[in-house]
Image (cartoon, rainbow, N blue to C red; front, side, top):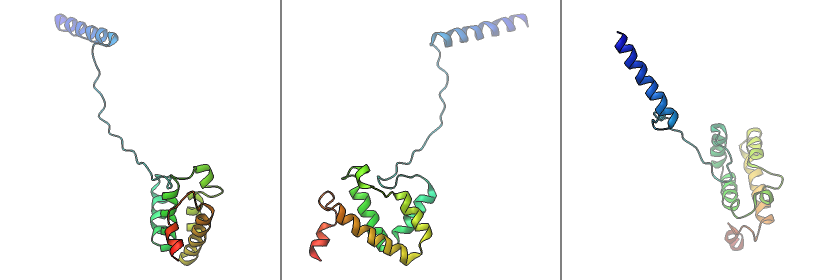
Length: 131
């Protein structure tokens, strides 16, 4: 019994010495992490925000505006592009406006942004010239 205790103590001291010297490596945790990288304009990983964005995309006018926003956000400096408006504000508006009113809001906002950023964001300008 005394021999077993002594050998166990020697093994523990050896292990501690190796760990202290950096020779022994502790087993690494096998935890896997997932990260969600949102699109440029979405700026959110919250499921509720994603559901609102999907709901807004069902409206043709809002879908066109959101596509324009996503494509132009990478071409224009963010602090210039979102001047006074953010996707968060659009989500809040979407919660408070009924379907047709939200479509009209998106249509007006889309027209305003296309006018304001004409030249810096050529996305969709071909459609305007044909009309």
